[in-house]
Length: 511
Ligand code: KIV
Ligand code: ZN
Image (cartoon, rainbow, N blue to C red; front, side, top):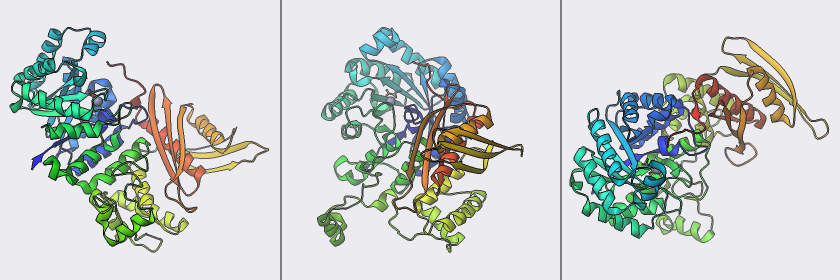
């Protein structure tokens, strides 16, 4: 069976999308999950784009051992130097270089002729080869390029040492049959293609990114570039979980598979959704809340008689546990640890200690603690160090009086500060008090509140995104009290801002 290389770009193309930014600690957590999932190549970032990105690619490169780690570069020596520096500690580094080949990009963006593009691609690959054996070259906007020109550029890049040539549908324009045919053409007409892997990178503007990637695989592509939950620029990238499960379920037809451990898919999807705050739609294939739910009576009857009547894969095969055993206040450390393992978390002793005592407090407040509650505890434990810690809070609110919010915070130096503010509602008043204490007024770009599970005993989960000094920071908070979850979320974002002063740029200025 042919093994398709899975190249995950959640941390680069995914993270680059508005609202999907992650701080360096969150990126590290995601990278560890991707390694556990069995991803072949993790594209960790675009090192030249910001010092923060370079640092997080470096941190990822230093800890990931079982996947290659790639850094993206334009076809410029300074970009390649930054990637080289970021990837110095990687066990298996890959330098990924791109340059556009379509007439519209060459004329209006690059202002370069075909010959100049060809020459720059070759010299960039040659330069990267001096430092890194594994070089990938991407022809940006390849699908809207002259196919013979792409073959020429790919042939020259392979000659210069590229081990992978990537054919992106950058704007998600291709139809599936057409895309498969194009990949067949490229495979047939690129000089030296037998010495390199042919990759595809599809965007989802017409909702065809996964279908196009699969059509390309059927036509002979060796690598698929994708992201967890399909996050990415505009309508997103091809979704990893859909490509991988299509290959696993239909390997009879596609004659190809991957080395992905599919039981890690659900956990990876939850983590990415959690750290980016981008929710997975309930009807999303593979990882949506309803992907395995059977509501209609006729379906339920069929599934009870034989699951295969309405299920082409099992929830367990993607890591959704159907074990309904819930934990409660009498559950011990062993049961808690077992459940963590089942959910795909491997935590160190200190985190286990911390989360187990938080679990006990939660179990006292809530009758039953389910998997979503446990996930929230663990993911909360991965938060950044606390410059400001919540000590206590109170709000007074009503329809006639307006709201006042009192908060007492503890600074990491041990001192306490307390403040009362008036505002348009409880959250506004309490956030105003926090701003006065910290002496900054970040812009609140997003405030979202939901329930972790159904039912009135569910915990409230708040997601906030703030912007300060051209950087964005995310924060999440979970509590049985929705005001407390809102405070925790805001403080988490503030702590990310205080800790990682680089954050992720609101906008980079690269083209
Ligand atoms: O969509 C695209 O063309 C890209 C390249 C940089 C590979 O993301
Ligand atoms: Zn892309």
